[in-house]
Structures are given as C-alpha cells and as structure tokens.
Length: 192
Image 1 (tube, helix red, strand yellow):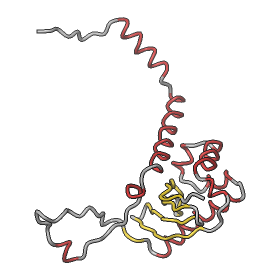
Image 2 (tube, rainbow, N blue to C red; image 1 turned 90 degrees about the vertical axis):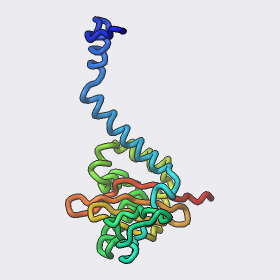
Image 3 (cartoon, rainbow, N blue to C red; image 1 turned 180 degrees about the horizontal axis):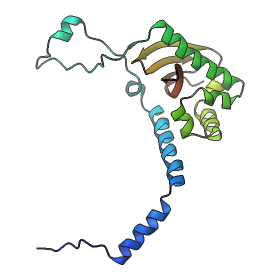
Image 4 (cartoon, helix red, strand yellow; image 1 turned 135 degrees about the vertical axis):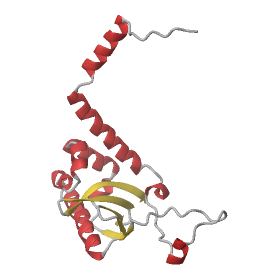
C-alpha cells in the first residue's frame, strides 16, 4: 500500500504563497468582468437556432395528457410568453434610444442604457471598440423594426431587424421599473 503524505513540502507552500500574492481583489475585479464580457461575445457567435427559439405553448388538452413513449417531452417553458404591448413598446424604446445614441456617436449615452451588470463588465473604450468592430452597422442604420418579443416578467428578448443589414436578439432586463439592454446577439447578418 502506498503512503500519501498529508503535509505539503516547503516548496509546495512557497508556490501556494506566490499564487496567493498574485490573486488579488483588484485582479479579480478585472478578470471576472472580462470573462463575463467574453462569454457575452461568444454567445453572440452561437448559431441563431441556439440563441433564440420560438416557444410553443401546448394546448390545454395536450398539456394535460402525459407524453407517451413515442411522444417527445415538450421543452417549452410555460413562464415565457409573448410580451404585452406595453412591455414590448417600453423595451423597444430603449433599443431605439441606444441606436440613436450610436448614430450620434454618443457611446457613453448608449452604455447608460445597458444593464448595471453589463455596465460593470466593460469600460467605455471597450464598449466603443466592441460596437465598432462587431456591430458597426448600428452606427449608420436608422431603421429598426421589432418582429418578436417574449418575456418572463423580469427579462425580455426582442428580435429586431436592423435596416437590411442584420437581425439581432436583444436581451432586456427590468431594473428600477425600466428596461435595460443586457446584451445583443447577431442572429443574421446580411453582407453587402
């Protein structure tokens, strides 16, 4: 039987101390938001079918019947539903205001329309670079059209056509009785 030592050697302790000195609160405050921002950007790279899907709510007869062996189990979330007109209008108004800010090159104003979580994860120069590099069509397009809105009361997802250039899914969150943009993913980009 092999004996496994329970104590660490001095060399192991020194390595742990060096690691502890490198992991600082300011370092974590920079690293964690950067990782969050990268994950938001990577979500934008997901195919449209994985990013936004329509939800079908089963009829009352189908909902009461339990699925048989040949029937698939429905994966629709009954808490997600179409937005009521007031929610859709209020959330879409925020998207339109942000787009006008982009058109006016007011990136600080555009960032103020984002959720507090998003704002804390990115600096103004990072946000400006992100928009300019990945969402440049928002800087010139004036025409937006909302084609779909779903909600679960605290979040909403808006499907928005941007001129003839792209279709975006905006994830909105309710903060302090108003909607804020928590992220946007390109569902379809039309190349010129």
